[in-house]
Amino acid sequence: MVDGIFRLGLVCEAMFRFIRLGGKKMAALPLEFQKRMKNLLGQEYEAFEACYDKPGFRAIRVNPLKCSADALRGFLPFSLTPAPFATGSYYIPQQAAGLGRQPLHHAGAFYVQEPSAASAVTVLAPVPGDRVLDLCAAPGGKSTQIAGALQGQGLLWSNEVVRNRAQVLLSNMERMGVRNAVVSSCRPDLLCERLAGYFDKVLVDAPCSGEGMFRREPQAVKEWSLAHTEACAARQLAILNSAAQAVREGGVLVYSTCTFAPVENEGVVSAFLQKHPGFVLEETGLSGGRQGIPSCGDGTPSLKKTRRIYPMDGGEGHFVAKMRRLQENSNAPASYEFTAQKKPEERLAEALYKELFSVMPYGSIVQVEDKFLLLPRELPDLAGLGVLRAGILLAQKKKNRLEPEHALFMASKAQESRQKVDLPLEDPRVYSYLHGEEIGISERLKGFTTVFVEGVALGFGKASGGVLKNRYPKGLRNLK
Image (tube, rainbow, N blue to C red; front, side, top):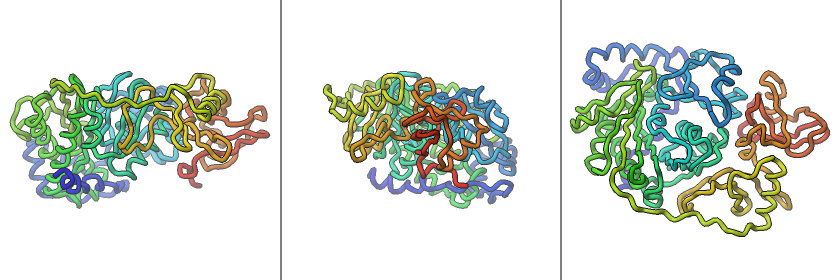
């Protein structure tokens, strides 16, 4: 049954990958979609429809692990206007171009994220020390937002069932300098059964029909159907049912989508609460958007506590529901077994870390085959859960030496690095470095050296004779 639901809904994850060309008029809205939205919005429908002749909202979110909003505002060549759905989220001008090639984007100082999408983590409200599960995490917008709120304390488990999307998630987590996370590619039912009762907060940002992306991705309009929304709803409910297991007693479960479809929003929440009476709806705390619509679900008045965001509200479109588990959950997953005695090569990895940084390692150094990881000190058992990465990749064994890894430097701070080059944004060496070229540096620097741009870690290289040999990963480089 579960296999069938997951196969049925795979299309939900594959849709909406086409980027809207500036100024191109989108395809006409499907008639069935128009009819439903007229019923939902009444007199507001005209304002809703008029939005589709305008460009979509664009926004970025500051990464507090690496940069402050004030600093970022001073570095970027365009204005930032606060968005109402999350702290650190800012509207940017339509004409802002080349964001992915910006050095500070490479450095993880900001994440490009549609403004209303940031609302789900605002509702989740993670705080330092929480254990948080992001169950449908790729490409990583919400996970990196959670990581910023955790400030390196507690544990973030980010999961994506589709393997190649999980690799994109991992890359974004590394770019943003997240230290206290596990990234996995595991089926939600298996993951949540194994980690039952472990998490304080769980986010299900479910794959959906993506109606909130119509304005930005016109191809989505052509691929929309009522049958598709029904298929997505079946899958969303299956994922949410799995997620319920992972929430501890008193913990919070947040469900979100980027669609307006009642069957995927209030309909899924209603079906979930009927099956799980140990959960109750709570107010989201969001000021943007408007109340959910009880008649879109089973009519229960508490569905007003959910939140709908339309283009007229300042975001492309989102739905958020916050549920708290009151029912007992006495499960206690097995803990990761750290060995008391370090292996000789683990001691070498620790020595390498101390050679590079002036602070003690922020995790436990563990060897896994030829790799050395800095693992968060509090972990559940990882076996059999499709873990791509836990913690930070510190180094890799190559022949008779240990080579430090890019991810280690991306999670570093300027004040921690023993050897560093901190380049101004306008320095041409920044772009040379991002192209993969050697750059000139002080002759006093020898060995592995962290590269910063305006105090934000960008990568590393190996210094010798006034030249920094480039170690920026080839797959991340800007092409000329």
